[in-house]
Length: 111
Image 1: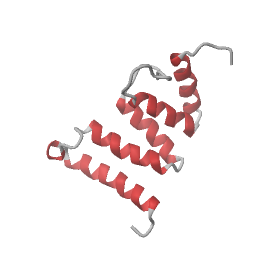
Image 2: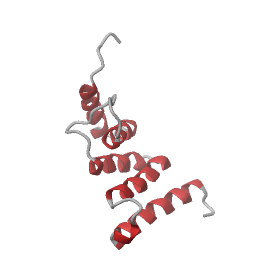
Image 3: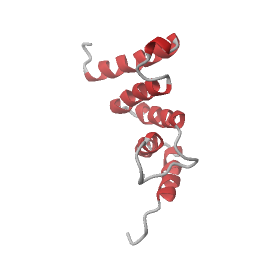
Image 4: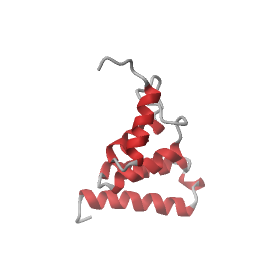
């Protein structure tokens, strides 16, 4: 639209929209916070933070997006040490399991 790309400004606008309740903005901010590559199109305010990404994924999931609920489970795994379940607290395992069970039930109600 005749403007130079500004990843920081994009992050600010998305944050404002997400705080006003926009689930799409929350999803985009969650992805920006959990992005691991170079040259992001969006820089979230305050920089990348997986715990903030989790909050935004939960916001988007509350709007009925089952893929976001799946991302909540994956991000909980990342925040709790990944696949090293032996070192993960039992409560974290239960929370992650509950997220994945909810996703599976959404996708197949007979589960």
